[in-house]
Length: 162
Image (cartoon, rainbow, N blue to C red; front, side, top):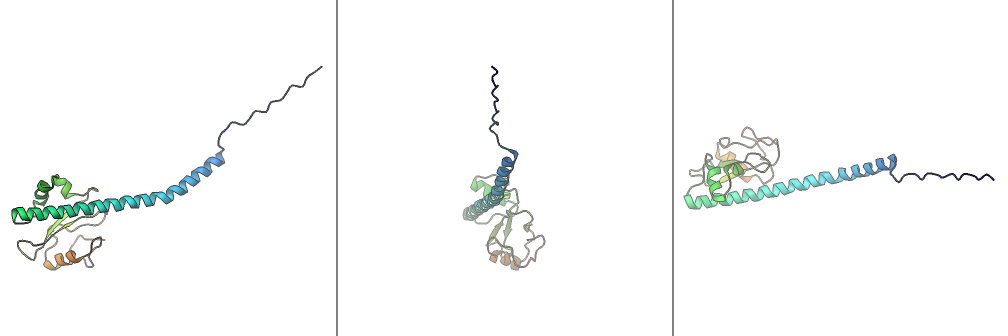
């Protein structure tokens, strides 16, 4: 008697199909497109907050320098003068964490200057005025009265761009 040979069906291997893989990748791309901009914005906010704290500390160091030396640092020596009080290297004072230069401005209205502004930008493309760019008391006053995180309404000195 002849027996029928049993036919075995091979079970398909446990794996993802191409369609399933494309679907998963599409979902991951959608999630990434939502999360990445929020993460970048959050990192930018943290960097701006850290820079504001650094500028506040530099302002306190300037006050301490004034108290000790009876004068404010000059634009020529401000990084070394504040660096010695803040235990920072002059290059760390002259530039922020994004390697953008800070600017030190003295009020030209009085000698010795009663007011000092330390400017910093966290955005590429915002050209800060240099130490010699503020030549009049009106320009300094306009900059002094400009709210934080904004650009002055008029740009009477060269190099300032929004």
